[in-house]
Length: 256
Figure (cartoon, rainbow, N blue to C red):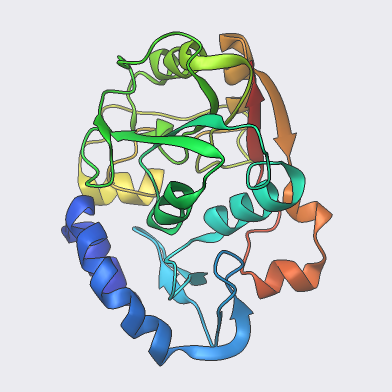
């Protein structure tokens, strides 16, 4: 199964994968019913989660029902338990880059947010836009989600500046990235062009860097106030295992 998933991830373009996954998701959820692991996004439980990874694959990380990964489930729990994202009575403007399937329909249905999605290629994007040159006015959005996007962007400084520009004063942004916390500094090397070598070094063939601990300070240099939220430390070890979370993953919660 690992080899099959790895082949699909590395050979089929992401927009096509998104469309295909909509069809196969109910089949996977039916076949893997159980009670060992639970997806907190929809509350469904399974005998196992699926493997995932472009380079080395991780076991029990991809939910059969929502297709969420560790980071998605962690973000959902944080929003649900630590913010008023789902409960606020004041309507908020939300901008979501490269919207994830597990969130897209749920956020669209929320009556308490004015929800806009954006991306250059995603079929789920309302607005096709370059993150380094956004077509939105200054101080437009109360909340911005931009998760696992910046590692794809050669000029991430300009992208961060654009995120800061369109976020309202007092607004919140969550900008998750794949991060190697053992690295003090971010690593990039434009001379590595072979897709297999990029997947091996950067974790994915279309990544341009591996972020280190300095990621948070780079966001601060743009102007953001950054909370390094180690949310798994606030959950019991039983829940971390049950929800298949990555213990120690940091959520970068940014404010303007």
